[in-house]
Length: 371
Image (tube, rainbow, N blue to C red):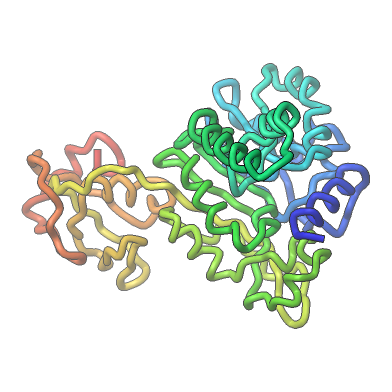
């Protein structure tokens, strides 16, 4: 049995009857749960609550949406102007989630939730369209396989399941560890592709404190149980950094291990991250002050910031460091006088003379001082 087959079978069983060993204890918002059918709650399997990161008006993508619980919770938070998309490859789970779609649309006042069939490591390929294509064009020889590959590539480019830069918030609840190790890098690259510039990620998953040994990875039951496919705790963060995300952090970390297998601790965590804006790094005279408490810190681009010092930054970095996850740690200061943009040429750790920014905080039109 392959990993993918084992996962499909285990979660098909989970759609039919409750599988208590597939989830960790999680304290969900009771007000959001109150609107949901009990079957959706009972047959949801997760290890965290990424719905608490949802904001009004968001386009939310839930990877491995299962019974639809997180989707229907998020739908209450995005409001009439938002949208929630759930992606799953399991037909039984999709059927369960869609079973209550009309009922939930009536309760919410609008149909703002959509469930689509796809693999989370290939968010461009619509598996429902693929099934239709295979019915109309069955595979009978090697030439058909080549034609199918060409069709798939065309579909990914011309009719992607999830478009580039289209999602405000990507969430997932204990699903990334189910993807084969060989596909995990592509999975996180796909998350980066579909997230808007400035968009966010909130992923609840299981990590290990030590690398998982090969013989445990070969155990299909441990893998489908969200255990042996877990990334090591440091590797999990690094994978998002390598994909291009910034402000990558563990926002939630369970001190108590969920399970211990052969001395390896497996615990629930929630990782958050931001996709940076793809803007040129231009010097307009901005500065930031790192508040502390550490003597100095580095960002994901290698810039160093000394506590209490006015550090020279480009306008893009100033906006990033004074908003979102960084907002509590930095003070943004606009130039005292408007400067013509110049290509950034300063070395990391360059100080900005106070004379160049003196009085600018009083002129700023926004709290960050970087507008």
